[in-house]
Image (cartoon, rainbow, N blue to C red; front, side, top):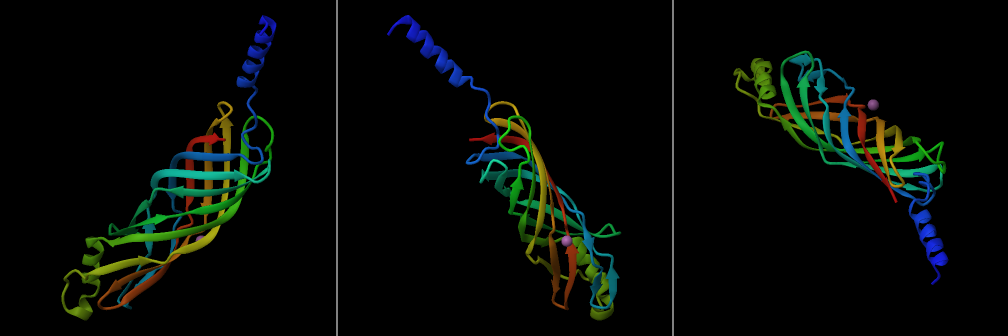
Length: 234
Ligand code: NI
């Protein structure tokens, strides 16, 4: 091999290795995004009619942060389909306008969205908008002793005692619409910084079960979900 050929081949190889970063969103790409995901419910709860004895103002549900991961497949340069997954979120539940801790629940909110990348196929930052569907499955619902003690006081006219009333909590699973916006800011050919937000319509019916009666009320969680992390495209 002549030295000219060697130099030419070396230059070609160097050119390939240092080729300008291709777009982060091209047809056929997979994009995996990993980061901290916070579910921040924007709660709207019906009042809780406790068997006609009293009416509580409803419930509040606090936020939680877990590890979020999304996988996206680019169907076209400008269109992708994405799945949001996460480690289980756990939320504390309290009775509105009181100090009563009511309990807690865990949930998983898998969400599929069809995404539009207006700059798909171009280099540089990649904003996207998504529209899709969410399924939220609740599990490990627990009732706090504070609520059982409060139920004991509330039901005293019926039972004649103020002993705590053992209770259970269950939350119906939810299907709803999900809206999404996000952006990838490329660091190099594969890696980007990612920030995304979802609004998810999560509505559930809560049932507080006791030996005396079941109490049911509707709760809209409708959370904002914020995720910040990294994206890897391959
Ligand atoms: Ni809703």
